Image (cartoon, rainbow, N blue to C red; front, side, top):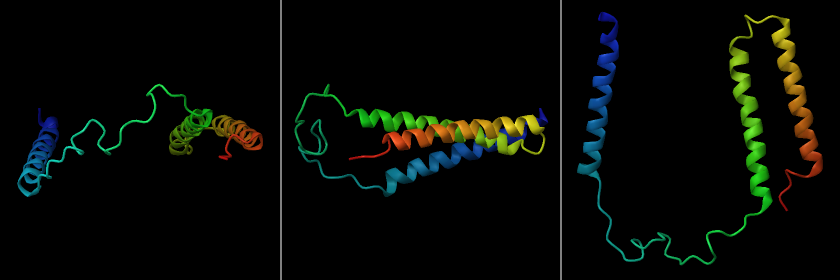
Length: 118
């Protein structure tokens, strides 16, 4: 039971700090004036121009997919870098091969113009 005392202290301090910050926001914060434009469904004050089901440009999707691919690359690099001292040469060269394949894919996308926004 003694192992859980630090966890309990942490939870008590976290809860107390959260309540203090929340209470201070009510005490110090100001309420804005009510404005019919501000309270409308579209906070910016403009009516929507088009249908919500309008088509988007394919470049938005392409950029999102490319971001996911290279974001996953970084998520594989962190554990590899942390365990680099304990893996053997096979682990090292398999990650180098993985990075080379991703670099080839990146250069291919760059040459095809997927990263150009015109």
